[in-house]
Image (cartoon, rainbow, N blue to C red):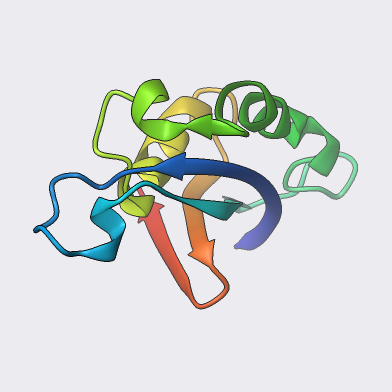
Length: 117
């Protein structure tokens, strides 16, 4: 199995208002998110790639246009946790990239959430 990944980033704010009073994430705050898309394939294409990294510009364009410098609670129809964002991005890009097997979303250098099909 061949596996590749590519990282993208965006900055956004959110409020995790379902958390208990006093939880710091229940207040308005922001992150410099890092999104890693993971692709795999049993075989390589004619150029020796799982997928040409340049084809993944769709991910960057979406993040830049829709999520970057936004308030996620106003953009997404779900509680904007890293876990839910990972699932949302997986579902968004799976039709474009059949090789996609996981999306990882990191809010800090020490934390990440991964959604795998």
